[in-house]
Amino acid sequence: MPISLTEGSVVFVAVSGTDAGGPLADGLVRQGARVALLTDTVVEADAAVTRIATTFGSRESVAAAFARARELLGPAQLVVHSGTPAISFISSPIERLPYEQWSASVHDAVKCTIYCLQAAHEHFEGRCGAIVVFGPVLSLVGAAGLVPLSTALEAQRSIVKSAARQWGRKGIRVNWVAIGAEGNYPALESAVIPQVPEFGLPSAPLGRVPDIGGDAADLIGFLGSDAARAVTGTTLNIDGGNWMVP
Amino acid sequence: MKSSYIQLKGRTALVTGAGGGIGGSGRGIALALAGAGANVVIAARRKVTGDETAALIAREQGTALVVECDVSVRTEVDAAVSAAVSTFGGLDLVVHNAVNREGGYSFAIQEVTDANWYAQASVAWDCAYFLAQAALPYLKRSRRGRFIMLGSCAGLHGSAMNPVYSALKGGVRGFVKALAREWGPYQITVNAVEPVAAVDPSEVFFNQSPQVVAQFMRNLPMGRLGRPREDIGRAVVAICSDEFGFVTAQSIQVDGGLYTAV
Image 1 (cartoon, each protein chain N blue to C red):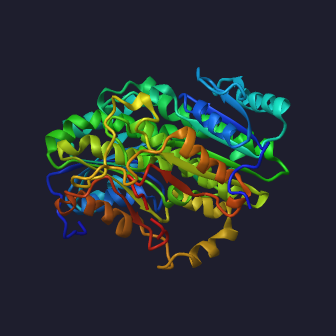
Image 2: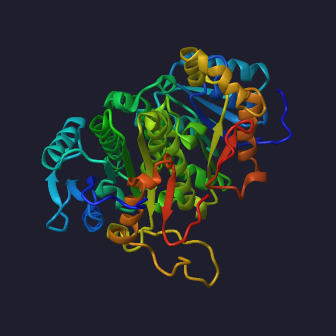
């Protein structure tokens, strides 16, 4: 049984707020998938990736983007989503955090994820499918200056579990992938990323932080494959063994 | 006053949602804090329920102040913090317990609307943000400040029937972890308490879904819901005590052993 996507599989990658969708889409194309990238961000991506510019500010706009992707590529077996508004990566102590930044970072982020889950559910209606939501791992450990980002990510992770419980019997699996931030999220370079308190050792036991386009795309491809048919509602932490989150 | 072996005398606590209904966790927390000697500021959306809590505290010779407060409105949260400081001279303990009763209703994710989201999120999250901004100067001054949020095991396991509530309570875990790192240098601890209790949202939920109650109870190792004052309130009192001064960034299960997968 293949442990990655089968050749020609259709994948919708719906990413808001970061350029992570580009390398991820490329990585999935390398696995043989046909990929639609639904994004509100300017990204570099392989010419084989079908780009669909969209906004994630309403249920209708997201549904329209999914409909367009279906029109162009046909039904997807895997939907990959990340919703982290760019403003949520700006580090600020909470006492100096403006309400506009707070609101956009938490409310817009989670609503975006709800819209994408709703669109994916409608897309899969009557069919089996997989959804993978991803974001930087730091929400699992918290980061000073990034209270709203940590809040929104943990909320998204919880609603992924709710979706997995609600839709499992329909054959829709939903999982969360937490990706090491270093190198993958340039917007966090000015933030203080917490490190594992291991004395004198490099933080990642594997010696590097996995990248989105290779390591994370392979893991997400596995989650979209039939080999992962019994995996749902889980959090897979891909950070090179840095935080061994229970 | 029903005395507690933990003494918080001289400290001032602000508890949101401390009016609550019969069996509300906020009321139980307020009573427990007052029982430990703290001055308690009861932030209640409806003054009449806050007055009821205050009367219970007064009956036990405790000290309380009622502030009518819609916690989703920044100016009202600021006013509650100001009232605490002007009445009692400072603020040491903040307990954000308030929730919107809509959290007890079941939703399919595909049916969730923006209105559902904001009804709950403005109370659960915006209030936490407002409280953190308003209370920080006083918690710093306290040198033993505590910021406690009420989470839920629903946020951990991802409730199938309450996705918005689950998301918001899951978000509480992210909030406290990040804020604890931020406020650690000020010696302010930030924690979440995740109870299973006979509180308003669970009453709504159970009334709406009686068929799940028996099954739920069978899965509770201790076979009962937590009692708002004795089980949940006293856990909060413990976190507020000096004994818990080095415990921060934690989401503490007060759930009778329900959720064991952490």
